[in-house]
Figure 1 (tube, rainbow, N blue to C red):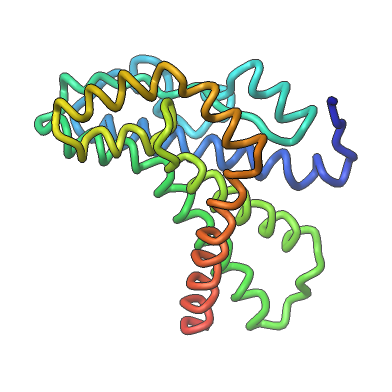
Figure 2 (cartoon, rainbow, N blue to C red; figure 1 turned 135 degrees about the vertical axis):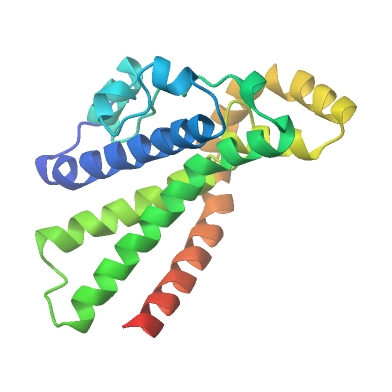
Length: 210
């Protein structure tokens, strides 16, 4: 069933998710570029322009159901000096950028509270959705199922033989595994406690600052 979002939901959630997707892919591109790989720049991905990162089908899904995806950033690991270590950096850059942006949202929300600014305004609602989407998107991408970033991180931590067997076995069924994880609610049960723990720690840290 296709669920059309009402105007208020589109007003906050769609832009928040768009930003989360963009910063995620931009971070991948930036780190790979910093490691000597010219591919992201050559393919036009070294930019914060959302249009460069949007996938057509993912964008349609974003508008219709409030969840979408971006085009994966193309990288060429042959330019890396240390394939495994550098691949881990590139893979974690996306989720890491999402966590950093989520923490920034927490800081702004806590600052607004500290200075007595109303927490029910449009800005606070947008910051709330931006915070949530970045936390959930960051942890979702760390699930070790191809093509998510988590699978690339795990692959670089295993022995070469184990990594080959892992990639061969899991990649074949990655799409179906992701559907299973999402539609059985397993993703929510996995990410929920992690997201809650991250946000609790973030608000505690922000509270120490303000």
